[in-house]
Image (cartoon, rainbow, N blue to C red; front, side, top):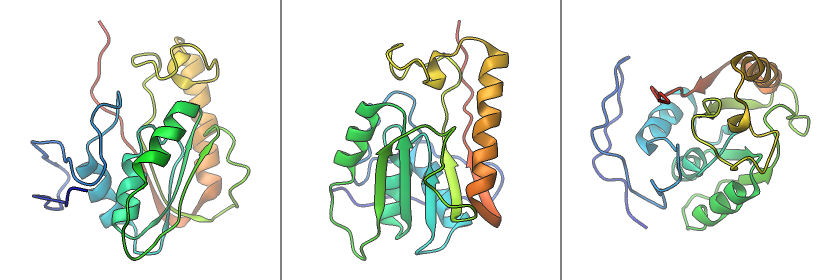
Length: 183
């Protein structure tokens, strides 16, 4: 496992990470994942050791890998079974002290298995409609298979309501939206 090399926290509103971090088990091959420096910076700024962080569209596992390294408990959910397996494998490294990292198949629109007001930080990087396909159309409910902007926004609103329900009062939700264009 690679150590965290060259990471400096960003404390302003403009962050610059010229090179993608490649420590631990981070793998830039997962299409659409975000740089671990972003997850690390947000987790360090908006949570404490022992807190519970939720990534309800866990994808390649960036958030949960950083949770494990930073001594936070993590819950990762994804609608794609392949993503769930990728994250479980990525979390197979030793780190002390031990934290609980849970990865499960599920849908961000239904977080009923999570109690109200129980999450300390939500950090996620949702699909941008159908710009990057995460399930190649095999999972109809996958947000990346929606091509209608109004329908996509309706689904994001459902997700936002679930986020509000599970997030503790006065805690934070960070949603990464990249500058991606199609055609």
